[in-house]
Structures are given as C-alpha cells and as structure tokens.
View 1 (cartoon, rainbow, N blue to C red):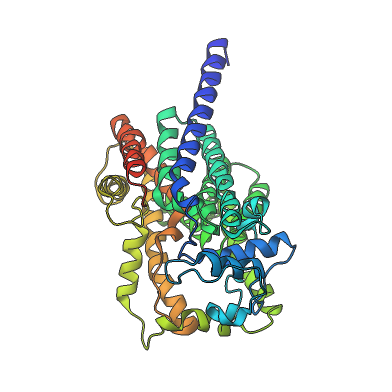
View 2: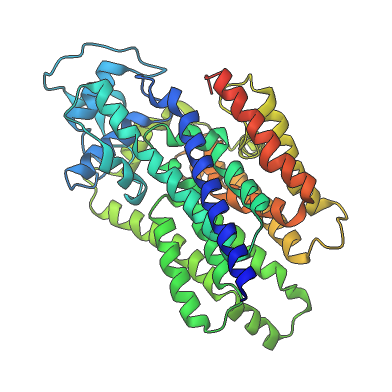
Length: 438
C-alpha cells in the first residue's frame, strides 16, 4: 500500500471512529428520558433487576429461588405500568405476596447479557437511584454494538456512508434505544447480531475450515449465553451462506466444499444452539422447584385450548416493526420502518439491478425466512410447553437488525443509503427528542 493508500485508510479510520462514537452518543441520549424515569418498565424489568443483584452477589438464580430483598423493595417503592407504588420502607418483605409468588422467573436466561448491569448496579442505594445506576449498564451494550459494527465495516471494506447505515439503523432504532435504557438482556441483541455478522464477514469462505469452525463455535457460545432467542442471527447467516452456494446445482463433492466454506457459520449456529440447550438442562438440574410451576404462575392468564394462527401473524407484524417505537404516535419512525423493510423485501421479491449479487439476495431471503420462522415457531413452542398463547415480541428480532442493515448496504444505491442511513434516522431522532415518549 502506497503513501496515498495509507492516508486514505487512516482518514477512513478517523471518520469511522468519529461516526461510531457520535451515533452511540446520540443513541444513549435518546434513551435518557426512559433511563431517568423512576418507574419500572413493564417488560419484566423488575425480574431482570433481581437477576442482576443476584449476579453481584455471585449467585445465578435457579428455578424456585425467591426474589432478593433489593428487588422486592424496588417493586414496592417504584411500581410499574400494572402495579402502583406501595410503602417504601426498609423492612424485610415476604416474597410470596409478590407476582408469581416472588419466584425468580427469569431463571431461564443465561448470565452474559446481564454482566454490564452488574458492573453499574448499586442495590444498596435508595430505590430510584439504584434503578438509575443499574440502567447505566445498557450504555455498555450500545458502545459494544457500535464497536462491533465498526469492525464489520472494516472487514468488509465499506465506505463511510455504508457504515452510517449500519450504525444509525442498529443504534438509533427505538426498540434498541428502549432496551438499552432499561435493565434487560435484550439490550445485547444488536451486539449479538453484529458479532454474528462479523464472524460471517471475517471467516466465511476462508481456508482452514477446522479453525473457522472452532472460532465460530466460540462466538456462538457467547451469543447463546447472552439470550437463547439470539440464535436467530446465526440461523439466518447459515441459511444465507448455504443458499449463496446454490446447493441445487452442486455435486456431492462440491457440496462438501460448500460446507467447508461455511464451517465458521455452522460452528456458530452449533455453539449458540448447543450452549443454550446445555444451559436449560443445567438450570433444570439445579432447580428448587419445577420450571413449569413458576411459568404457570407467570403465564396462565394467557392459557388457551388451541393454537391460534393469528398469534403467528401478530408476531410477524411485531418483528417487522423494529424501527417503530412502542408509543403508537410516531409517524417519522413508521416512514423509516416502511422504507427500510421495503428495501429489504424488494431484494427478495423484485428483479433488482444486475450489480445486486445472488449472495445479497440469499442474505435478504434468509433473514426474511428467519423472521417468519421466529414468528411461527414462538407460539408453537409456548403452546407445546404450557398451552400459552403468546406471540413473538419486536425486541426478539434485534439480533437480525445488523443483518438486515447489511442487505440494504449491499443493495441500495448512494441516494438510498443517504436516505436510510442519514436523512430518516436523523429525522426520527429529532422527532424523538421533541416527543420523548417512546
């Protein structure tokens, strides 16, 4: 590389680091209104907080463990959308009078997603201050995601406008902003998807398949131990990698070569699925009571006599609303969401430009299939497990957001990337600042 090439590379790194830092900062600022709200979030923040406090005390919750006293006091003092605040004194509280009998119902969750919160939590502080301190851990996941997306862009050799699409889509999306402003492991979703995308970018097609498989396996274990549903990202990338090989055209020998080229992706999927299944088995072995008892206390209000296909449709609609905030009055976000997903779906169903490769179409199609699979599979799993009628939630698709953004990067022209990477995200951020209710 000549002197001019080194200068260009240095200029790229300076611009890329500045861009990633600015977007991460804006993302954190957008979550400030929720981070400073003293009420508990309705998306099980109380139970997630209890998990964090247990981790600080070097204990991983087991099925049947009672919620710890700091979490019980937090619930009493602050309330959430369903329960009003009660008395806020320092007495010892009886766990059995709280929802689900005070049992730790997030025991099915692996611990890695909570580690940043365990670093920032101060359970000995006054309840409002303790919750605010714990919520600061979500900032760590935003910064981690920004760094991983920067690494993806560096490996892929993307221009800065393409990096802007990755960073703004993933970090300014209101679902991620909300997750990172409260205590939960969904805040790790974008980082998990970015890690999976980085493995695919760096290792797919490389020689030494055994080494690639081992590295992919390790990355998969990390993803699986963040949250089980995050396996959807490795699943989409494996499917995309195999589709890109056009397997219907391959001989047996060529098929084996294709598997070797995708060894890292296959290892990542095996690591994510295997680690989470192993976690479930381990948690069942150390349970104080059966997990079904706790889950029935939590979910029996949704019990149904038969599976509802409408739950699959509702789930798909939710998963395809990644850029729409939970507050319904968000017109700019709706426009952004429609334009972004429209660009992805167009790659799958329309005859696109000749410079849009088959690999990009495979990536788009595989990600859509992953979303449909999650939407259809979630109600089925819950019905089989306990006859509960639940649909997939929007936040479950956060690991797919970096993959979807990569489809846009590979298929959109410069004007499209400017629109989707700068104009619409900036407009949505401005709207959210002016209307801090998302």
